[in-house]
Image 1: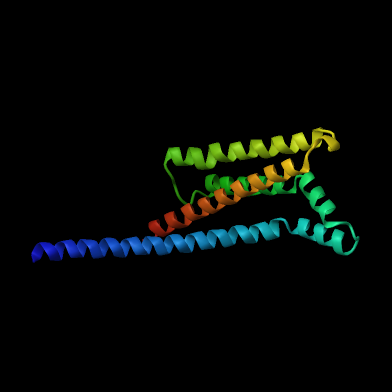
Image 2 (image 1 turned 90 degrees about the vertical axis):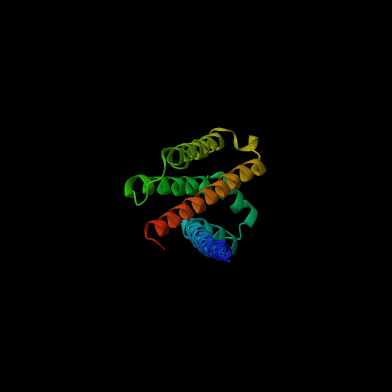
Length: 170
């Protein structure tokens, strides 16, 4: 009977800690996703205004304004700003510490790759003849980079929140 009681206590403690972790993870994912959506909305507010004004006031077809937005690299600059701000926050604020491999991958290698891709795509778009660029290709590449940026931002925010909760004993 004693052995059963010890095992049961272990199982209940494990399950309790597991459920707390899952609840904290769900809260972190929802907060981080909400942060990214608000950042996306306000970070691209000027673009939304340009699209709306072009369509509603100037009667410019939405497709034309939409294409101009992507061909001017607005999403590339947004991705660059998000990646840079998260990386600089980590290195300048140092609210938490991660292992060297995690820091190297999450805050050096990955941001560097995304920044190089954003800058390269922008230079390619602006140095080629406008008629030689396929809008669908540019659209897919920019949306791909924006998606990768969003996933990266959400993961970094989740890691930060979980680490801070762990340090605060929550």
